[in-house]
Structures are given as structure tokens and as C-alpha cells.
Length: 122
Image 1 (tube, rainbow, N blue to C red):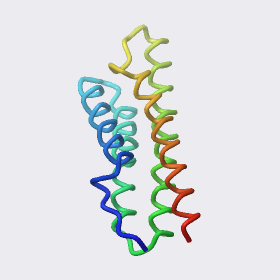
Image 2 (tube, rainbow, N blue to C red; image 1 turned 120 degrees about the vertical axis):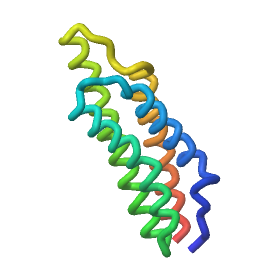
Image 3 (tube, rainbow, N blue to C red; image 1 turned 60 degrees about the vertical axis):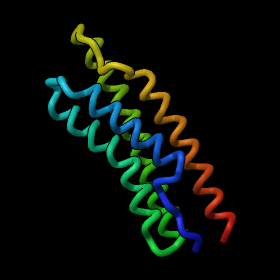
């Protein structure tokens, strides 16, 4: 197994930036249940990358990258639901909601490529 310093990984950095954007963007929201779930999903993306990098094998790392990819889909879904709820209520969604949705797509692609790289190096 190669050693992976997650702090140097662009995908981890982008996941952290996305989590910060979500936390800041949702700060004043009164949709407490949805806000809490969105925040947890966002935090899960870089957290799973970090946890996997600290594991003892590429197979473990790959599994945690897959969890992170799942969290990207979960966050994207929740942000889309949030945007639709706001539309129906006539309120404003979190700032940068569309950009955050797009970023989940980009991070998911990066994670897929990383998973493929790890599996082809076995």
C-alpha cells in the first residue's frame, strides 16, 4: 500500500471547501431537520476521504472513497430537495446552491477516477 496524505489530495481539499460552503450557506436556515442532514452529508465527503487514507490498505481506502462518493449523491439530492422546498414556499435557497450541486458532481467524478486508479494498481 502506498501512503496517502489526504491533506495533499485535491479531492479532499474540494470536499472541505464544499463542506464550508454548505455550513456557511445554511447557517441562518430555519429548516432544522433538512439543514442538519445536509450539513452531515457535506461533512461526510472529506471525512470519509481522510478516514480511508488513514486505513492500512488500498482496498480500505477505496471503500471509504466509495462512501464519500455516496455522500456526494446524498448531498446533491438534499440540496435539490431544499431548492424545490424553497421554490414552493417562496423563500430563497442557500446561497450558491446551484454551484454546490455542480461541485458534488465534479467531486464525484474525481472520486470515481481515484477509485479506478487504486483498483488498477492492485
